[in-house]
Length: 299
Ligand code: GUN
Image (cartoon, rainbow, N blue to C red; front, side, top):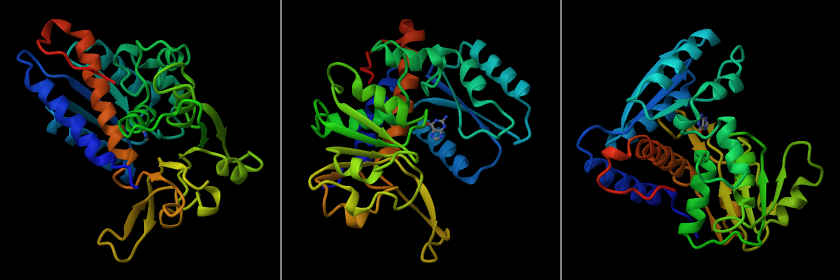
């Protein structure tokens, strides 16, 4: 069976739109910074700002040239940190190699860090302190599993990939005590011997490698749940764009073995965006409780 991330994302977007339409003074506002002109990043950023507009969230976008200095980028972040009308700040990754991504993540105010990449927010995640922001992709996966009544408690979850955006915060989230946690987690990566064997032992397999077709049918246990985080472009002469988007998972082979699988597109991607909106509204409700007549139950 297929887990439909798109329709769940739409449902969350409707809840967010209901909340924002009850606001009379001002709307939540997300600031997005894009450095350079990577076509995939441009599409992601445009999807984020368009979805903001659909749900009554304001957004401001800054497109800086790829040669922009770290100093100018830090200045821009400082301005946004100080601006009381900005609730969330997102700097689209990846950044050009002359910019130190950690320095940028450290500079964003933790109260406006809707990506959850600031050390304070990553630290709170490790400490089981739910007052911070949780990175959008892991949070979206947790919500998607919960809404489909898939408990992770006591399950062996194998995460393929150890990125700061997905793998590491996903592991922390699944290890938390209580609701949505209590899993046994293994993180594997390119230096892991017996990676395929470990994947075969997973009750829930989460792949975030960025390598199309990496997860083959032979790497999946019968009846496992498979979560595909990959968003990869592969050439496709049949498509007018000349390419199509596929995940990390060899979908046709794996769907025969697993009990549940997320498609690409239409799985994790839309949930990441829903959680970005969720985090932006969460920031707004914390910063300006005086403006909120209705409550919004954030994830
Ligand atoms: N690049 C890929 N995923 C993400 C994300 O969740 N946030 C940001 N800022 N950049 C990304």
